[in-house]
Amino acid sequence: MRRAAATGFASAASASPELAAEAVRAALSAVGCDYAHSLLLLLSAHFSNHTQPAVNAASRTARCLQVSGCTVPGLFTAEDWALDQPAAAALVLCGPICLSAVQPAAADGGIPLLTLSKPEVQLGSHLKTGPVRYGTLSTGSEGVAGGDVWSQCRLRSDGHAEARFLGARTAIGVSRGLRVCSPPLQITGRMGFELFTLSHRPALDSLLEVAPGAADETAAPHTRYFAAVLETGAMPELALEDGRYALVPIIGVNPHEKSVTLAARLPDHAALVWVRHDPETAAADSLRTLQEIGQEAPDPEFALMFSCIGRGPYFSRGADRDLALLQERYPDLPVLGAYGAGEIGPVAGENLLLSYSTVYALFSAES
Image 1: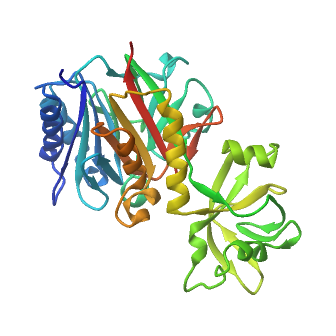
Image 2: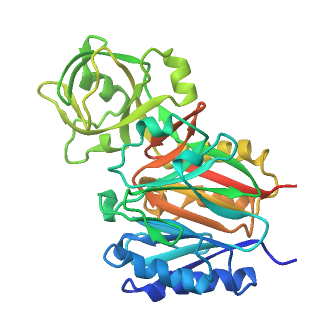
């Protein structure tokens, strides 16, 4: 029986439209078809000066106009990945599942929406309405602005595109993969980005209890620790369990003032917990996530993954453990994925813009 979906990957020393066409040809060869009825295309940020010609080349090769996608800092399939060189990755659909672009007014609550957006687009209120959403931010290299988004084979001037997979049952799961290291702490003294006291104690003292070397600026072990700022008004334990928190990086410490500087201003009287980002905890959480969504999609046709660039191969000594866990559970499953600077996914019934997370989406053909 001919496969309904397949992926292709191509990389080279320079970005060119032919590279996008090569990725599509590889996918068509794998699926055993000479055309596709829809195509999801990811391009590395190196394409930023000639994105439209690359999208056109992919469209001609696939012989279809239903082409959606975006540029991202890194991309991968089950066969290969790229983070620092020009690359293209494509998912072609030739069976009962098809990708259909969606206008905002046409979105309904029945089918989850693939959401691709530039970081400058204000997503806050948009994510809170309508159906489940999942996807990634489109950026330039190193997660900065400058990405491109396209739909129906054309670049989107508004920097935002959504699509849905028709004829599919979709199972979506989010792995945040963080280890809680402290009890909830109230912010009792701060100025700007700097925390002076937490629960009326020096902020640095509480951090040193979980990261003993945090005051050593040469080693900077605090770079793997974050402040998880709990949702206002929620019970701390429930907010942690449900993942209802904002992750804020630590950018410095002051041993003399015993303060901690964060990457964002926090509201007065908010509560936070110190959390750690490490490969073992992330892998365990990904395994749990896959087990949960696997019950909804026991025999998927293909998968999408949207992973933080901080959880890719460089996080786990050259191997993407999140992807490896998916492959162990579903050998030979076509996988298309992006390493980005912001992931979109559902947490506790609400669509959120996430960081340091991996969003899995499994797609099975409807019976």
